Length: 300
Ligand code: G4P
Image 1: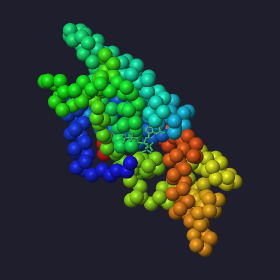
Image 2: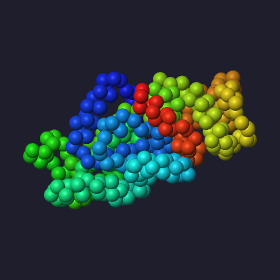
Image 3: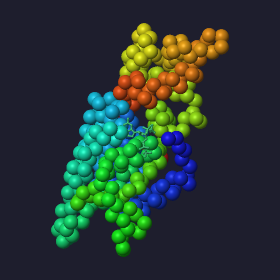
């Protein structure tokens, strides 16, 4: 799904989120395991202040597992409860309920001390478009589709799905807007196909991807396209030469037999998005100076 964000969209999404947040004890936030930083809207930290927080590293099946564990540690160190999830296949989804229970223990205990017993905790799924919210909800809810309906005096118009005696889920996810003033963040969102790339130059995106892969996954392209290893690439001109090789290997040719690099760029991006280049993670907590970036990201 492609999307574009305008100030009106963002204001509306934010208002909706603020309203729903009042009803919620725990926020279950989906991020893409390939770009856990770039797919996370930092504004959610303000919106969800005081709530229990769970992060799902979704699309785990597409990411490089070595780094997904680093990301898990990174978020856990910040006080989040974290699960690795493949919503499409349902892997890891069962553990989410346990983790949500854990995340809410303090809240349940607080309620108990105030004499409130057996009040289910209320959860909401949030995340940027295309991160897998609907897929996750379908998988998470499974057969537990019993809606609790509109109880008189409670949250008119909201539908809650009872997941267990202890948890109710708001049936509509909260849509966060991606935040990509930082070009690198925008590029990563575009690489995974989460922002409308019709307005972007796909060939430039492909050059940048080739340079990234050369640095972090140096064999991914040679392996996929059966091109001899080509060593370290210095710049876009070098990347263009690699794209030419891909074009020739895959018979992406212009009329005169010249390599059609624009066509090869589309092919490369499509292969990347469908994990045909392997499981690839695009950002790393220890390589990026995430702490510093986070500050800038929030100040934007
Ligand atoms: P959203 O509600 O947050 O906007 O996202 P949605 O569930 O629509 O998911 C967006 C795309 O991501 C869908 O692919 C969905 O199948 C895929 N997806 C969601 N979770 C996972 C996951 O854990 N692993 C993988 N590999 N894919 C996931 P699509 O191509 O738009 O649709 P479809 O052809 O798969 O149905």
